[in-house]
Image (cartoon, rainbow, N blue to C red):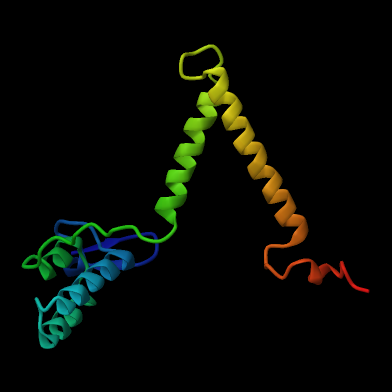
Amino acid sequence: MTETTAHRTIPGEDLPQSGVRCSDAEREQTRARLHAAAGEGRLSMDEVDERMTRLYAVKFRHDLDALTADLPEPSPVAVSGWRPILEAIGRQFAAEARTLLARGSALGSRRRRLTIALVLLAFLAAMTVAAFHGFDGEGVERHGFGRD
């Protein structure tokens, strides 16, 4: 039995019986899990080599799952670096801006709004001075000021 597609004729034995074809990205995720398992000591290098050979021969998602069925689920990756810090700053800035704009509410007291406005103004002034002066820390010598 054969089936004709828009591009070519597929032999009947290659037709999917059930399941979805796996993508290159899914193969890469499986490859990463296998290498992580080897790094944790869960698989020997021979087992990894054997599973990697099978990995690039599989066609369907359920076949990928069979390669990692005896491994624990990957633990959630802890986010490191500046991203969580910048996200927290953004959330805080948004909350302060909402408070600043909350005219007449109990949260948006006049004194608090004034403090927030002054802090923002000082920050903008500092960034303006830094932009004109330069961020590299070489000082005024870079601009030629103070020369005899």
